[in-house]
Image 1 (spheres, helix red, strand yellow):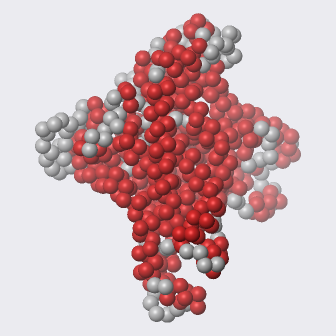
Image 2 (tube, chains in turn red, brown; image 1 turned 135 degrees about the vertical axis):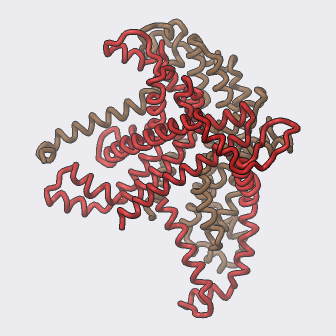
Image 3 (cartoon, chains in turn purple, blue; image 1 turned 90 degrees about the vertical axis):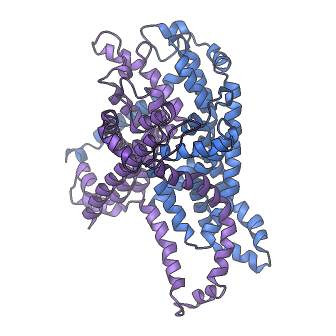
Length: 325
Length: 280
C-alpha cells in the first residue's frame, strides 16, 4: 500500500503543477503546457476507454447494485418483485445466531492465518536473505502455492489429512495415540487444520514482500548496531522490524482482507463443516444466495463484511500511523 | 550475546529452520505426487509411505476418463486463452495512456485496484449473475470469459504500466524527431521493448483465469461447460477411498499448465515485485 500511495501521489503533484495557472516554474514545463493539457487528455481517453468501459459495466456497476441489494428483499425466482426494505435485513441478521457464529469463525480464521502467515513468512524471508545453500529451492517452493489452483491445494491437503491413508494421521498415531484421526471432520480440530492450510497458501505474497523489504534495507544501521554489541535478536527487534514497518502494515492489511474474503480453499476442504465449525462468512453468504436464493440477505451480509474489514483496517492502520509519528 | 561467539552454531540453527520450511512447503506437494502413482490397494494400507512400493500409471488414465478431464481442460483452455487475449488487448493501450498522459484517471485506477480488494465477491456475484442471466450468458463460457477478463484487468493494467514506466521517454522522442508518427512509435518502438512485459502479464492473466473457481461455480451449472477446477470439485464429492489415486492424478494434471507458465515468469515476477515494493 505504501508503494501505491507513492505512485498515486506523483501524478497528483504534477497535475497540481500544471493547474497552478500562469506562473511557469521552469521553461520545460511551460513548453509542455503550450501543447495544452486539454488536448492531451482527449488523446488519452480513447486509449483508456476499452479498459474502463468493461470494468465500469461488469465490476463497478454490479458492485453498486450489490450494495443496494443488501437493502432489499431480493430473492431468486421468476416472478419475484424486489422491494426496498431499508435496514430490515440488518435487523434480521442481528437475531441470526448462525450468522454471528460465522462471523466469529471468520475473524478467528482471518486473525490466526494473518498472524501465523506473517510470523512464518518473516522467518523464511530472513533465512532467504542469508547466504544459505538450497536457498533457491526454498524460494521456489515458497512461490509454488501462488501458481496452484486453490481447488487443487485443497484437494492436496485433504489427502494430507485423510483419516485412512493420510500421513498426518499416521504421524499422530506414531505419537502414541490410537485410532483414526479425521482432523478436518472433528469439531475441535477442523478450524485449526484449515488454518494450517491457510498459512501454507498465503506464504508466497507475504514472504516475497518481506524479502523485498529486507533487501532494500540500509545495511549501515545494521552494522552500526552490531558494532555496538547488539545481538541478532535485538537487531531484529530494534533495527529490522521498525524499518520494515510500512511494508509490514501493507502486507498484513492485504493478507487480512484476502483471508477474511477466502472462499474456494475452505469450500473444497470442508464446505464449512463439520456442523458449521469452519463456515467462513463468504461460505455462509454463498449458501444464502445460491443455495437458498436469498439474494437480499446475502448482499446484506456482504455489506456487513465490508464494514467489519474497513473498521479493522481503520483501527490497525491508525495505530500504525500513530506509532510512526 | 552467545550467538556471535558461535557463528557455526547459528548457521546450523539456520539450516535446521530452513529444513523445517522445506518440509512444510514441499512435503504436501510430494505427497500428492506420490498418491498419483499409488494403486488402490496401497492407498488402503494402514501405514502410508511416501515412496509408492509399486508405482502405477493407471490413475492418470482413470482420471482422464472418469472426471472427463479432456473436455473440462478444453473448456478451461478456451476461457483462459480468450481471457488473456482480451486483457492484453484492453490493457495495452490503457497502460500506455495511463503512463504517458498524466490524467486524473491514473490515481483513480490505482486506488480502484486496492479498494476492489475490500469488497467480498459475493456483492458483485449476485448482480453479475442476474445481469449475465438476462443476456443468456450464464452457463456460457463467453460469460465466464467476460467476467474473468474484467477481474484480471486491473492487475494486468498495473503490471503493464510498470513495464511502460521503465521505458525512457527519450526513446520515444528520438522516434518523433526522426519523423515517426504516434502509431508508428507505438508499434515499432514501444511494442518491441515491451515484449517481456506483455509476456509476463499474459502468462499471469492466463494463470489467474485457469485457476479461478468462485465465478465458475456461480455462473456455470451445466457439467458440459465445467472448467477444470469445477470438474475436480465434483470429482472430490464423488470420490471415496479407492478414487484418491485418480483424484491426485487429475489434480496434478490440472496444475501443470499454470505451474509451467509460472516457472517461466517466476524470476521476472519476483523481480518486478521486489522493485515495486521498495519504491515507497
